[in-house]
Amino acid sequence: MQHELEGLASLAQGQSRLYQLGGNNYLVYRLSDGYYATEPKCTHLFKSLAKGVIVSDAHVQCPLHKAEFD
Image (cartoon, rainbow, N blue to C red; front, side, top):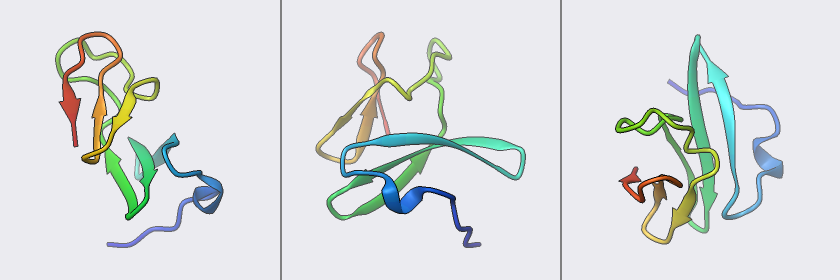
């Protein structure tokens, strides 16, 4: 299924933004090869990944304990 997300085109490389779609929240981030989406919270401590670091291999790193999610 394909959806258009408002403001996605303005997302700069290395940036992320939270979106809600169908009642679910997603963290969408842009890399040099495209856009990626993941759950917005760390499964360990349930903290927001929106302030996490995007690492080069398309993973988001939790700002609290450095676990990586893709």
